[in-house]
Length: 152
Image (cartoon, rainbow, N blue to C red; front, side, top):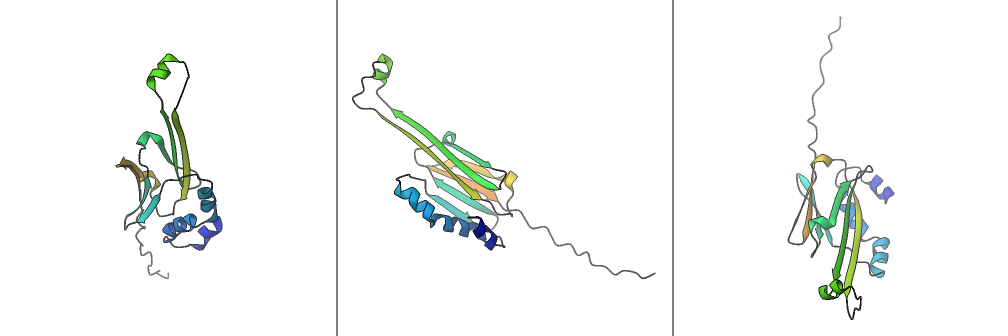
């Protein structure tokens, strides 16, 4: 993945990096092993990038989002579900005829481009979609430092 990053010198590589990742053979191997990963949208707007993660049935407490020291946005999900008969649990007989439980864990890291304000990244959860807003930094204005030098 790192050689791919080196090819993109301008700030337009961010969406391409995500597209290349999802077409990668590693992703296909994950799908062949029946590991399900949430669908992710990456959107570039004029003033920010947006990452949307489809997460039906999840809530904000199931997620952790961080920016690591390698300039990656890391999204982690961990969900435990136990659908059992409460009466059996109270009796502590452990004579289950049927009991369903699940455990889901997911983590994905996205390399952030250089033109983002990492301190201003925000996230919110609504209608089964985790949305992460990544504001772009404004380029510093070019200051004209040219001047005439007086010869003494």
